[in-house]
Length: 160
Image (cartoon, rainbow, N blue to C red):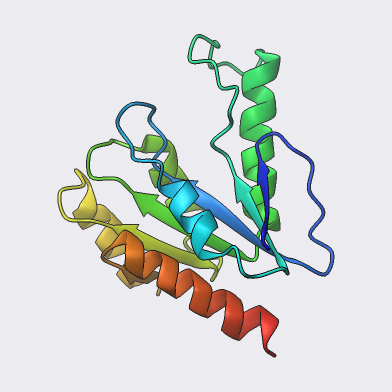
């Protein structure tokens, strides 16, 4: 069974495969797609799913580097993105997802992204061009994203 660690939880990836769930979170707008990906990876004992969607998020937190809770969240996400072996990225068409766009830019050269950007996402053209230019794996549905994540985890890390 995959181990799920939500921000800002501690994790240890030694001997494990880290899968970061990057993507739309905008509360009330984005579907909870992270749970679906977690379920899709649950059979892999060697996987640690790094989920930034924290249970105790408080939208009233001031989003400044001086706010300890906000700083902790962003710092955890940045470190987990770097530590992960695979970054699964989902753009919900009902959101703007500016942080996810930022993360796409930061990690487009990393060789570990799998992106799903459905029709209707307001900047789909930008996402498509970045993915094509930097050879980022791209799929067109959440189901295919889960399937691709399972394939990548299995091929690259578990059955070598």
